[in-house]
Amino acid sequence: MIRDVTAESCLAFAVETEELGAELYRGLARKFGDDVELRQLFERLGRDEVDHAGQIRAMGERLAPRFRDRPVSAEDRDCLRAMSMSEVFRRPGGPAVDVAVQGRQDALRLALRV
Image 1 (cartoon, rainbow, N blue to C red):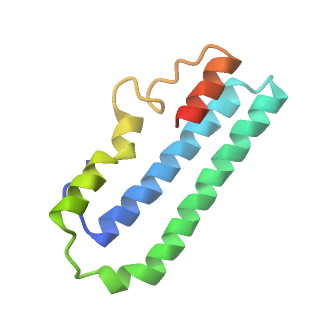
Image 2 (cartoon, one colour):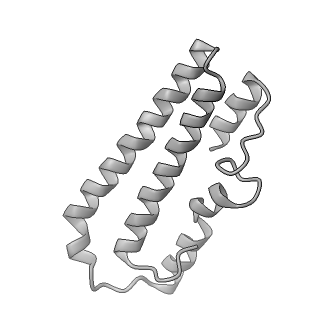
């Protein structure tokens, strides 16, 4: 969980979340490699996550200097902690830790949930 909430840590958290999502989709694409349609879907979703991470990095390069010394309010800090997707991905039984997907429908449900 984010401990020291700054503009930089928020951007790092956002990039990490996208990278974890890409990792999840790559794993699902491998797992369902024999299902061409499903594999292509997960490959595309993984590429989208990588693209999102790049967009966030670029945004950070433009905006972080403006917010470097600006404090984050207690309310915003609490909201960010509540939204901590990296914790969702990493918790025991979370999608990136234990992808217990048995079939096509399970895989699609997981992708929609994420």
